[in-house]
Every structure is written in C-alpha cells, then in structure tokens.
Length: 564
Image (cartoon, rainbow, N blue to C red; front, top):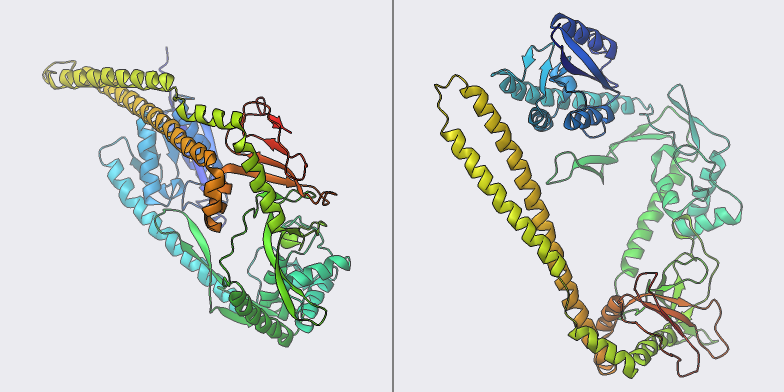
C-alpha cells in the first residue's frame, strides 16, 4: 500500500503595486506546485489574496480563512507553502505570532524561494530575520509610493480616488460634470455673497429643489451642513491640486491603527483641471469660515450655569429624536429685552446633518420640568409604592447559582493543577536512555499542553463568574441607594442643585414623551418611562390639574406595567 502523501496548503498574495514577473499569482502558484510535486506533497487547499497589502493580516480574507481552517484541523495539513516570506507578511510581529499559532496546531511554514522550513532548527531564526527585513522593505515601498504621489500632485494631476462632486474622471483626469457643477457654484455663491452659514446654505438648496445626484460614495440626497463645509474647504474647486491636507498618523499604543490629522500647511499647486469658481471666491469663503469659527468659539463659551433638566430625555412627538434645552430672548415691541425664555426644541428642526423635522413647538422648560417632578413625587408619596421600595431595599440578592458555578470552576481548577503537576513529575522521571524516551516524552508533552489549554479555559470561566457575581452585588447596592433617595424624594429634590437634579433624572428616567399640542388644561406631559424596575402593581396617578400621565417601568416587555 502506498504511503499517504503529506498534505499542504498554499498561500499566494500580490498587492496592486507588485505585479512584476515572479510575484504574480500564477507565477507563485506554478513555483509552489513544482515544489510540492518534487517533494511528493499533496496540495489540499489554495488560498490567495489579490490586491492586498502585507502590512498586517487584517483585511486579508483568504489568509484569515486559511488560519481558521488550520485551527479547525480541517484537512490535517502539515505545512503551508508560500513563494517568499514577504508574501506571507511584511510585519515582523504579525509573521512571528501567526507562525506560533500555526505551530501550536502542528503546522509549519515553508518559504519555497527563500529555502526556509520552520520545522528545522534554524528555520524560525531565519524567519525572524527576514520578516524584519520585509517590514523595512514595506516601509521603503510606502515612502517610494508617497514620493510618486507627491510628484503627481506637483504636476497638477489628480491623485486617485473618487472624483469630487462636480467633476468626473476621464482617463484619470478631472473634467467638469455639467449635471453636478451648478450645485457647487450655487454653494459658493450663496455662502460668499449672503450672510448665510453652511446650515443656511443647506436649507437654501433644499428649498430650491437642489439635491445631490446619487453616486457611489454617498446616499443622502440632501446637502448637509458638514458636506457643504467640506466642499467650501476643498481647493480643487478653484482649480488647485492639494496634497497633504490630512496626514495618517499611528495611534499611540496600537500596532496597526491609524488616524487622519488635519494639517495647517500642505502642498498646493495649479491643477490641470478647470476650476468651478475663481480663486478669489474660494479665498473669500476661507476668510468667512475662519471668522465664523472664531465667532462660534466665543458663543460656545458658557455664559450661564443653567442645566436643562430633560435635555435628550424628552423626545420629539414627530420624529422621536431627543429635544434639547435652549434659550431665546423675549423683547418688548420697542425692541428692549424683558426676559429670557428657556425651552425644549427638536434637534432635527434645523436640518442638522442632512435630516429635518417639521415640529417647531417650543416647550417651556419650567412647565415640563415641574410636571415630571410632580409625576415622581406623586408616585413615591403613594403608601403602597413606598412599602414596595422598602421591601426591595430589604430584599437579599440570590447569588446561590453563581456561587455554585464559581465553586465548580474552583474544583476543576484544583484538579487540572494536580494533573499538571503529576505530568511534569512523569516527564522529569523519564529515563533518557530508554529507547522509547522520545515517543513517551512527546505523548506527555501533548497531554501537558492540552492541560494548559484546559486550565486557561477554566480560569477564564472562573474570572467571568466572579465578575458576574460582583456586578450583581454592585447593582443591588446601586439600586438600594436609588430607592432610599426616592423615599425622601420631596425633601431632597427641594435642596438639590440643578446639576444634582439632572444627575438624578438621568439615573431614574429613560425617556419622557409629550403631546404634539398642548392640552386644554395646559399639560404637555404624556408619559414617563423609568429605568429602574420599581413598579410592580397598578397604581392610580393623576397630576394636580387632573391630567392622567402614563408611567412605564423598566421591566422586561412581558412584565412591564402601565399605570394610569
């Protein structure tokens, strides 16, 4: 009977910048197949990533699939064949950690062109050296690519990616898109020649039926204020090509995470394309944006310590979005101020971020805040409700099940540690002169490694169980504190600062619903949903004006009770 062939996987990769002879997918596959045939290996799986960078294993779907198959022991492979180590990866840490995972599952790496076999004594050392070299090479490629892009920008050519709105790409060059261009010219004209800001221009476009033509990099048909700001900042619209406006910087403390950072100075040259506005108009837009930014910075400084009690807790009756506290100044007919008016308004009514809401009512803060406080006061003053809260304070948390789970984990852990110690003693007592020494030691090593896996699994379960118990007990303590506060709600609420009241409301209340129109008795409040499970029975609740308010507790949907 013929001996079973050694099973192997092959992995190939090319980036968009590396399609030269010897690195193409077909060339890599042919070389590895010849190597497998020569060594009588059976290729049972082929994995390839085309157009993928080797800077990290993230984003390489086939590579990740191969690793999953190795961990699952899918085909019982002994090796992974790659053409060169640089095809496997160019990040030294990724290469070594991935190789360690493969070897944990009995799979080694063979780099055909480099002549490296990780199962050999010197193989892993060579992989460590070459993977570091590959990482340096990758950085050199990045620098060379960046230099090429800079040179392309210096020549006034487009550097790739989607064409900006208002243009189309024809053979890599920007040409004016006559369908989209009028919107861009209108944006600059209205922004520069009127007193409107970006939000005002967005409203103007919508009111005049000017919407975005759908394309591959956006689905919102409206020009949002943020989109308009990006358009106004982009020098491409005055016929310029910019490079380096944003720089990719590594996030400190991470290996492969990066962020874009705006730059104050960058390369700016005349482009080969036609501008949609003059350079003077574009510069005027920059001056106005800078002035507005300074103005808003001054406006944003807090002039009052007032806290809006229900901001984002009270919901718009039309769109469901949070309503936020705001202030307007009431004036007499002669224009002089006579009072400040604080109100809740829908955050979408100004069409922020491309969304809008038609609900324009301004709900007086004092009226709604007082109604919500009255709901809580009426609820906690009910003798039956007070008794229920006291009962919850005295109730003990049943942690019997989780304590039994912890005890079971601790017992398993003691058993596994005992087994581990016994295996280590057996390994130490082996006779090196025994002709079966290598086989016996290998068997014991396998059992020891498996025991380490079991210990790790049990330790993780034990930590999770202890954390769960701690969380349950912490929730009990927090709940008790809240119930104690509720029992003395009237006395405490009267002495609290606005910030303390806001914090209490955030803890107690999930959301407040209002009527679209003020009721005949002057009431806005429709319902209050509490976060804590504090309502167990039906309770009658009506406000001083005889209006009944729906009160909903935060129990599961099946057990939630409504109180009218």
